[in-house]
Image (tube, rainbow, N blue to C red):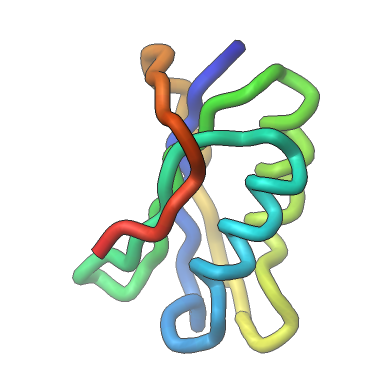
Amino acid sequence: MRTVRVKVFGRVQGVGFRYYAVHTARSLGITGYVRNETDGSVEAIATGDFSAVDTFIRKIVRGPVYANVTGSVVEEIPLQHFGDFEVRY
């Protein structure tokens, strides 16, 4: 198990990005959360097995159809436990 923080930049707010992240995470068995940041980016904290988290990262840094991701930062963080994957406000 591992936990990562993924921060995605570009046109990522107002394009369904958080709900794309929720759908993607839940389909992979990932727990954690996603939220909009005040700087216009989107942050996701994701916990799951190594291969599921790798797949999540690959999908999130591309984003949904209407997003235009211009950059991303992925950081390993200490293992965290969540009950589900949710949108936080």
